[in-house]
Image (cartoon, rainbow, N blue to C red; front, side, top):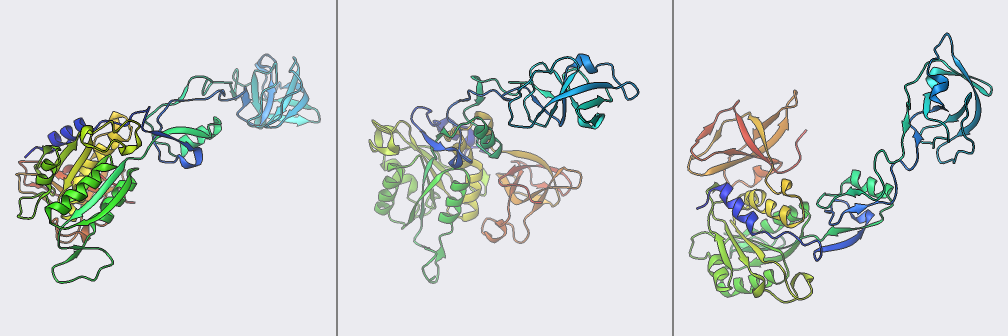
Length: 431
């Protein structure tokens, strides 16, 4: 039974990230939100495109206005008005100024902009009532970005700010990593679909829905393979199908030590290498992690010409819905992050230090994850609120609204209310 951190390290070592040469696709900019950039973006445009004004005011020569003040203003002749989008037609000479609006290109000769609040206009003349600083309110060409250099680097997630940058740079199409394909299957004779009437002893398979939502939230494409009965041949067929066209497989159930837990047996029969069989974590101790080498896979898997180039990673998760989700948050998410092309700094789980508002209890033998809500208090510090009701892995209902998992380390049986605790953030903060 591996410690949690060692298990995560083993899993990350098994993941081979997407290849920029093979695992990419070109998408339109409007379809690129939340995708991961695969190639460096270089623009042929400088930012700003020209020297321009950061204020409404007057474009002037600094030497004309460097000594003026309210009692002794400089008086300049206005020779032109320059709105945004207009190409200046005249150069500024000593004793002259151009009326200029925010974002407009600076005329030749001008080196400074005087904001209109410190001027007074009379006809075609302007009185400068306060001396500006040299080059005041001038945004110089290429001061933000120089054409031909790297604008955005691979591995970043394209959010609205990056989309805006790409649009401004004229990048209508770009190369992004493809989305990971994740096969999902549930095992257990007790499971039924959401549309079937329940019989005594049966439960609805919620894991397909939870894991599909988890995969979509993290940029993957879930392939739902349904419910597999506790029967070795059926499970072998399902796993064979799952590994035939996926990067990762998530199965729930069948990984403990019960009479009908066949997953490890079938994985061995199919030629996989099992790396993890259990982790010292609660909930989620029965966790199987295995890999299928490329030599065992279909020659057309993942659409890679000439055959698959990386092993398929298999996660045999507990069947308990709470345990399955905790295992995904703690172990599958880092694997998906690395596979997807994100930088190493974003592979690991995200922990924050928070003050617990409740007593957190554990048995001391396993690293225990208590679910609840991570919030910011009035002073901007993190605090953790334990989920209400019965707190055990059989209570899926109080997992609702969870965005954090507080960790009680091995060897510790309680963290008292008011003490600090490490919290794994799994969703955005509650307001």
